[in-house]
Length: 335
Image 1: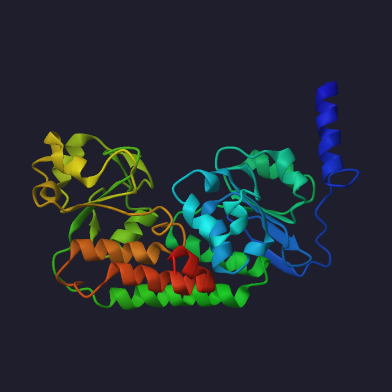
Image 2: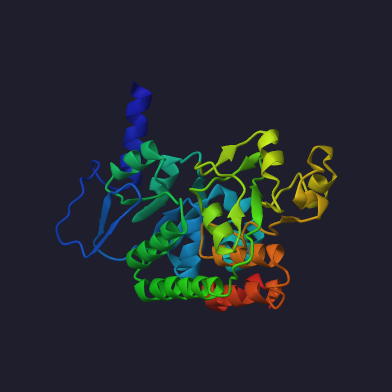
């Protein structure tokens, strides 16, 4: 009991107040509703942001708000996208930014020590959100299930960081890109596309998912007709679906050559015709950011090479990054 009391006292001292504050809604000039349906009210644009979600962090950099970031996800320092974030921010290169949590854990004491005026975590991290909010710190909960959610996240970040015009421009340009690309689709038979997550061959996404939106925007149809966002299917299903294309999420353990050599899959059209492809980068192909537009073009180019022969994927990536990240894109492109 004494140990627990001491911990609470420490947390209170860290935030510099005598007791957890209740939200005072008077005089607030900024208001957004997060993905929990909870209204956040800020007296001024956020100046010290702890962002423990990679998609939102990427969005902050797109908005030019990186100077506001005082805390990042632990994954930024050791997972696939680490080199790109290091290129965007020298503080990450030097490991100067605190990393008090990730999608699976939040160190509340470390978050409070950073004295943030905004914390961004997953909406499902309810216990962490409740503990942080007890100290009067606004928490923006995120849950991304579709491209509309991606647009909302950027718009809300724009409001909270006083980058509203930039956010609106990013969203409008992305929507224009998607609409223009869709206008070029023909009435020919749609290719059946199977998406494979890095957990293994039988991990895929159904029709109520961002993956499904991307497949359809690329002119294809999802081989998996389950409605689940992430589902595990059996081999018999995959063989019966007989996809024309297999698209792999970036995978450290398997390459397209491994799928092509799998003796169980030799009757599948995608394997017989060597139509198995792997997304090249977690950062550049992050489907939970505005970069999903690049994934659409990549999947379309793989699926319909004749129709989209004019698409230079390397140049498309450069063009997208220059718009989304502005002057910072040069560091990402080694220019």
